[in-house]
Amino acid sequence: MRAEKTGGSPEEIRERMEQANLMVDILSNIIEFRNGESGSHVRQIRQLTELLLERLGEETDRYALDQSDILRISLAAAIHDIGKIAVPNEILNKYGRLTEVEFSVMKDHTLIGADMVRELPLDQEEPLVRTAYEICRWHHERYDGSGYPDGLGGEEIPISAQVVGLADVYSTMTTDRVYQKARSHEEVMELILSGKCGAFNPLLLKCLETIEGRILEEQGQ
Ligand SMILES: [Fe+2]
Ligand SMILES: [Fe+2]
Image (cartoon, rainbow, N blue to C red; front, side, top):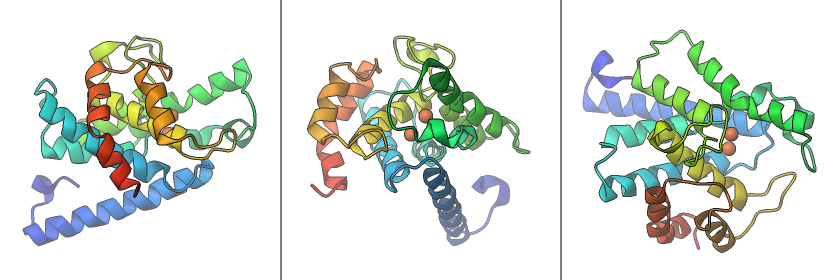
């Protein structure tokens, strides 16, 4: 997928990018189907990740994000929950609270997803592969170190995983689940910004607030 490796005219490169996007769409639909998620979750995460990263790039140059980083991270965001395909259906789509044991099986989707990426017969140093690994493994880490699986805190969490983690929480709470009805945009914003959904990078929360109008626009509101 790396253009400089394969070369070609701008049209050929664009066509390859479109095909790669299409394959990711197909793959994410399969993941969503297996995870019992409503159709729009992965698409929304990709969009929100892109909006947040663009805003973050305007806010600071701390993370040195260029356009290709933004595209790569939002593309890889689509497979953040790939490890869930190894979680039993009774746990994945359980109606009601998970027991402690069930929750620990559920948490393992992060490690399983990261292993799946690691075992791919691909160059692990390839930026897209590295980013996919970071996102799968660390999208449930939280800024104060209270997340899982590794309890990373602050900037120990790669920025890719920080952004996808925030986009995931927003999207999960605003879409219908077997175990929970969708909440309104306003309610979810309030819960996230007040820290009730776990701690996030304050700079990212600021970005989320700033792009609120764009989010509503994307949702057609
Ligand atoms: Fe997840
Ligand atoms: Fe998710």
